[in-house]
Length: 138
Image 1 (cartoon, rainbow, N blue to C red):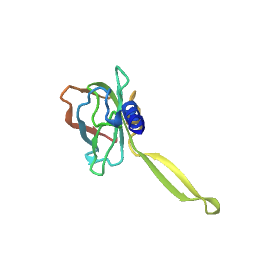
Image 2 (cartoon, one colour):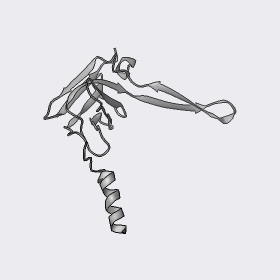
Image 3 (tube, helix red, strand yellow):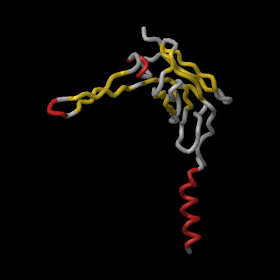
Image 4 (cartoon, rainbow, N blue to C red):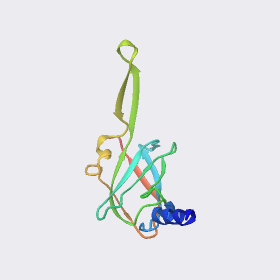
């Protein structure tokens, strides 16, 4: 009975294998601002058609690898609008020894919204491992 119960739970949960999800393709690259790598930026792909978006966070060298699903890497092939956002958290001593937290945008605001960023991507079935987002501060 116990073995049967474990089998049923495994079958229902899918063992986190990503079974039933659409195939993904590589979507990797680098983000720079005025030629310098951008660390800790969040890239979001918003699907033009469908419901499978993807996101990633850049490493200290500005590199990223998109992920549409927790269970597997990559993004679903298709067309996307792109937003790139970097939030900087600043804390300082406030009144009576309490710290104040100030959030500030680390990139020009236009990139933080997929409607104003002007960035799009069309991922083919082969994917893309050389995506370059060369942002400008002005």
